[in-house]
Structures are given as C-alpha cells and as structure tokens.
Length: 304
Length: 143
Image 1 (cartoon, helix red, strand yellow):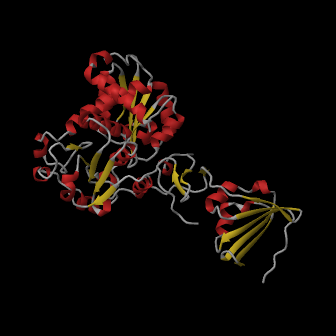
Image 2 (tube, helix red, strand yellow; image 1 turned 180 degrees about the vertical axis):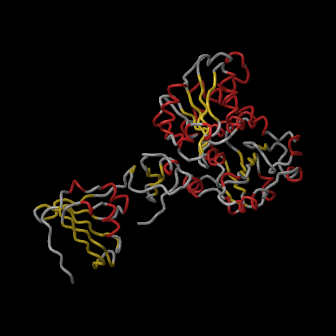
Image 3 (cartoon, one colour; image 1 turned 30 degrees about the horizontal axis):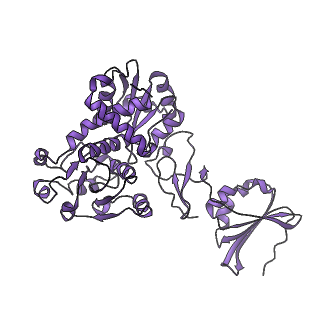
C-alpha cells in the first residue's frame, strides 16, 4: 500500500506515468466517470481549506466515487482530544482512501504509519503540500511543454510557504533549472533548502526586488503571505503587501513567461493581470483536479 | 596530577570534549546504573589540549553506542576486561535515534500527539545533521 507524503515519494518515471494518466483524464473524462464507483474518499481537514478539499471532492466525484469527512478540527473528534493515530484507525474502517490536512507538521505521516488505507498529505503546517506540487508540475509540463530547462522565480512567503518547499524539492530532480528566490529578509527560504541546492550544485539566487529579476524569468510562482503562519500580527501586517504583481511589472517579463499561483490570492496579484494570457493560475486549478483524479486511481491501484 | 585507579571490567570513554562529560553522563543515563563511575574533567591531552574522560565499571552491553555516537562520534571507546583494554570501538553515526532528543518545533505533530516517539534521521553524514522524521526540522542544540 502506498501513501503520498512528499512529492519525492514518486520517482520521476512514476510522475511521468501519473501526468500521462492526468492528460488522458483531461482528454477523455467520460472514460473515467465510473472508475471509482463503490469507493469512498475521506477528507480529514483539521484546518479549513475550502479549495484543496473541494478539489479532492471534485476529483473523487468525477471518478464516480463518494466522499465523507470533516472540514475543520472543531467538527471532528480532535476537538475531544482524539489523537491522529486513533482517528485514522477509525477512518480506515469507513473509507478506502484518505486525504488529510493538518496544522501540525508531520501529522499525515503519523496517520500513514497507523493507517490501513492510502493516506494523501493534503498539507501539513508549513511543511509539505505534495498534491499542490503535483498540480504545479502538471501545469508546467502541460503549458511549458517540459519539466526542466527554465528559470523559475518564486516570490513572496518562502519561509512558511509549504507549496514553495514542496515544489523546489520536486524540481531539483529535473535538469537545467535555475531558481530565483524573491522574498523579504524575514520570509527567506529555509536553510535546509539552500543547503540542499548547494550540495546538488543547482544554481539559485536570493533577491528582494521582483522588478530586478522579471526579465530573466520563464516562470513566476507567486505566493500569498499567510496570516495563519504568523505568531505575531504586527509582522503579518508589515509583510502582507510586500509584493504586488501588476500590469506594469508584467511589461518587464518575457512574452511567454507563465504566472502561477497556488490560490487563493489576496493582493499579491492585481486583478488586471488576470486577462494577461501569461496568467496561468486559474488553468492551474483545473489541472489540480486532473492530477488528484490520477493520484486517487494510482493509489487505489485502479487501472482502466 | 590526580590519579584514578584502573577498572577491572567496563569501559573508558576517552577524548570527550572538555566540560562535556556531565552532559554525556546524563544522556547515557549512567545515573540509573548501580556501578562505579569516575568523571575526570579537564585532563591534559596531547591531542586536544584538555579533555574529559569517563570510566564506568559495568558490562559494555549496557552502553548505548548509538547515543554516544550521536553526541560525539570522535569519542574513543575502550572496552576493559581484567584490567586491560581488549577492544577499541569505532563510533558510527546512527541512521536513526529514538527518544534521545526532542523536536523543539512548536508546529511539529510530536508536540501534541500522545505516545509518539521523537525520532530523528541522519540527513547529512558529513555535517552530522539530524532532522525530525515528521517535520524535518534540523536538530541544532549543542551538547
């Protein structure tokens, strides 16, 4: 039985198979409409995340399966003090596969250790968010044509932004990628990431101003500064609008640069950018459903 | 110079960084053993200038070499039998250590989950970096 805790749980060859399957689902949705009939997905969300949860629910529903679950810790037995280990043992009796989001880092791994069904990490604190990464990789592969051979700018909260950490971890396995980390001093990418890049001789630069590097980028991955990751309200208020991507900055970018964002966005991308053909973040959300459908089929070992 | 007598059976931990023997004593849980322990602090050393030494008179198998290697893999472990050194054990960094150190990341699941062991995995052998199995936070406390 397989789980998904980190994007690195799949080899690049396995990811290729997953993305091929997602591509087939995109082209032939009817073929997969009953693939998970009789199967149940449990969405165990200990912190609210409407978007990720609905993406999983949409994926399972489009496969003909059903969904049970809870959408915040207060409506689950966690509010009564139940441990993650106990919860997953019970959920294993009710469902065939589980997607878990938890504010504590490593919680889905604890669940996977005790679970009788495949567990998908749907985000654990500031740590990993592998299905977002699979979404990002599929989007880049589909819209850019290939995974590799580009300069990727990651902008915003690179310290607590788990989507960023997961994406970097996944991309280091592909060739000729250069990273540009654009963040304020307080939200720099953690040292374990830069240590790893240096060790693997992967080029990266850390800068503060987005304008300075815009012309170099093939892909720009914007992130939101997340209030829930801060212990201190003052720091959040000071940093939340540090970067705003607008039409003026887009003029500095290459004609075929793609703008990605895990969504939801707040102020970091001005709405005027939405009409720019280089804005790919809403298409990215669609790829998120396809890749989650492919993942559910793969972990349930359902082949058509 | 202070003289501490030979031990008949047990082990001598040599080349401990000066001042670290008490911390080692605690982590090896030597306080729980009913045996003779000599703690020698700031002994003269040609190699290190100053060093600490621990002499423990007990069965060598009671010593957790993994914990010892995690704390300082440059320590020399001399196994003593009938008053003589019969073996020098090489310390190798353990791949995993369990319930020796705690994860201090307040966002880690180990901070709230009941009965969950604190497990650290060797992430970088050269730099002796250990990371929490669950949240991957680097262990940075110095012994």
